[in-house]
Image (cartoon, rainbow, N blue to C red; front, side, top):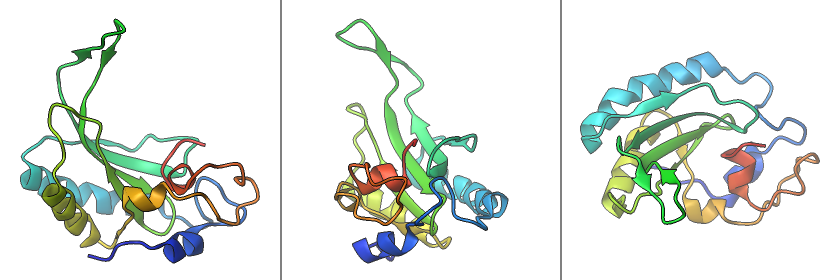
Length: 156
């Protein structure tokens, strides 16, 4: 599995385009992602949903496995635990893996296995630690961004 480095992020950054580079083939890339779904579910033993209706963002799709039961929050609200989420950037076949679950923590072994599976389809894994680095890219519209996560994997 190849893991992205800062140089890969700098090369992937587009100086003008914010949400997707010119020529990005969304439909073909979504087809590659859909083909991964059964293997990912087999690997993790969890059902995943695909969200391909992302707008106003530099990512365009994500695969997520969530707890089907909403949990109450001390504040009185409710939350949905995300066990595993694989988010795909519209730039340079980048992807990352995140979680926000106290119920089912993602193990390091699982993260590696998932990253290897997704990488086998031609995507480049970007670890969270790298995405937390300050944004040093050359997109003049996005110079205000705090980090690389916001550049490639968040709503703009």
